[in-house]
Amino acid sequence: MSTTWIIIALVLGFVIIFQIAKASEYVAILKGEEKARKETNRINAFLLLAFLIIGLFGVWYCNEKLKGKILGEPASEHGERIDTMIWITLVVTGIVFLITQVLLFWFAYKYQETDERKAFYYPHNNKLEVIWTVIPAIVLTVLVGFGLYYWFQITGEAPKNAMIVEVTGKQFNWEFRYPGKDGVLGKKYYREVDDARGNPLGQLWDDPANHDDIYVPGPEMHLVVGKPVKLIINAKDVIHDVGLAHFRMKMDAVPGIPTTMWFTPKFTTRQMREKYGPDFNYEISCDQMCGKGHFSMRGVIIVESQAEFNAWLATKQPQYLAAMGANGEGVALPPAGTLPSDAAPANGTDTTSAGATRTMK
Ligand SMILES: [Cu+2]
Image 1 (spheres, helix red, strand yellow):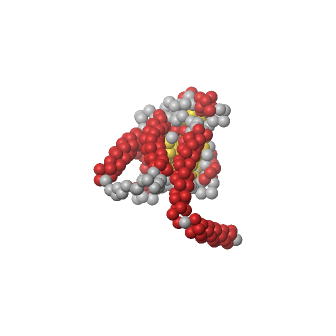
Image 2 (cartoon, rainbow, N blue to C red; image 1 turned 120 degrees about the vertical axis):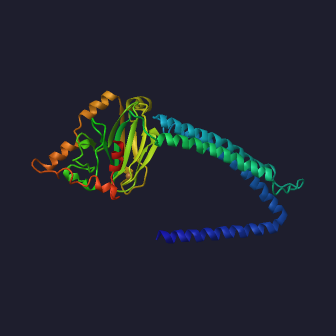
């Protein structure tokens, strides 16, 4: 039904425009072709000037209206660099934007047709072509170079003292895993994923590194202020994306390919609330359209002191114990060595982060 209406509207629109064009043609004939053209020219020149003034006012107005409403100050050192790059890019392109737009519209107005002046025919100039090709090329190269330099720092090796948190995306929430006292995440295998048996991440219980790993089902991830954190990112079903707007970080969560990124939170959640109001929360959003519930993949990051973090972690039990409970006393786990922990990744069928956790050891 709505398609029919759209077609009717389009046809009507076409007929109206056609009639207006016809009518203005008759007017031109009545007034005299030459006079009508000059009049249209004058009107167009004036409209272009008006467009310039209203347009520039609009740019200023939007900026004024939205100032301070976007992301606030970056809450990580990486974020500061990202913001610096955005500012440099905005200033450079902003200056070019202003100069070119003002010239374009002002010239169209100023040099409109008059009887006293004839247009100057100037079809080509090699020198000018070279200048306006080479200068933008150099500027863009510098900007991209800056970007690459920072990108390699951000995605490069995390500092030695970094804490590790594993983030797993699934439809539709985030799950977290902390490595426990040994600082090492145990191996996983996707076929072991079994919520009913207390193993939502597919941890391999014959790997002792798993015995102290702490599973946190979300939506809260806890981090320590001033301490670098390395995120090891996984997905269980489709591609998700860990989007940390306040830290200016984002990284895809891909099934079968663990990705990483690291950053250092600069302010605690409490400090940010003092600045931005009591409702402030660091957020994890899913930045990849991942299905019907995509919008609901909101996680919250609590940045706190080391002592607060330790106290929080102390309230959690290793998932190993929960899984043992879920299996029930007397129900034996498969004996060590029978799980496909080591053979599987080598033949390429592994779709967990086992590969990543292994290289970290
Ligand atoms: Cu998602």
